[in-house]
Length: 181
Ligand code: FEO
Image (cartoon, rainbow, N blue to C red; front, side, top):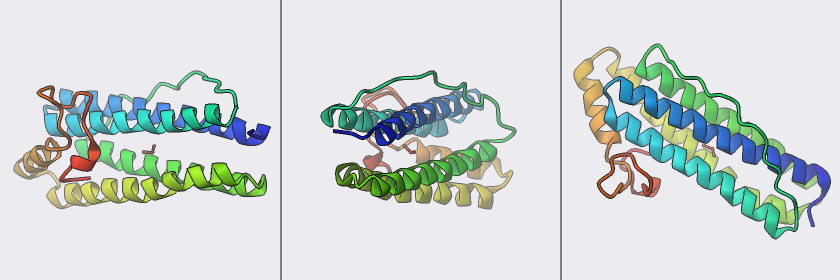
């Protein structure tokens, strides 16, 4: 049985993960427009991961006999000044999500909710990976700067993320297959 404050906070996190999905889909559309299909594919795979994160919490709430309550998802940003700017925002977004997860862990501890805290440990580890991945790609982008050839090389590398079954960037990609993640 979930205590009310924990149930409420988990529902907020479901919304935050679905918003993350929106953010990365929006970034994917931006990269498509920029003629960078590898970046677009990477972001689309990332959006799929965020959906899976939301569903992991969704399923947990139900398993604990809680009530999932879905609320409106904010509009994501749609424009960035450069390809690097969009990735910088992706990194900053992940840092914010990490803070949310840390706050959730603290709440679960306060409420003596060991099951929720245990479930959240998966997210704690995942956020280490998500931040490191975004930081790694951002570092590469900073080295490349305005060099178009360098950007295309990174685009090619990012395009290798996941096996999309002939639909570049399409559903089914698994970030664990990525060479750059
Ligand atoms: Fe679900 Fe990227 O944090």
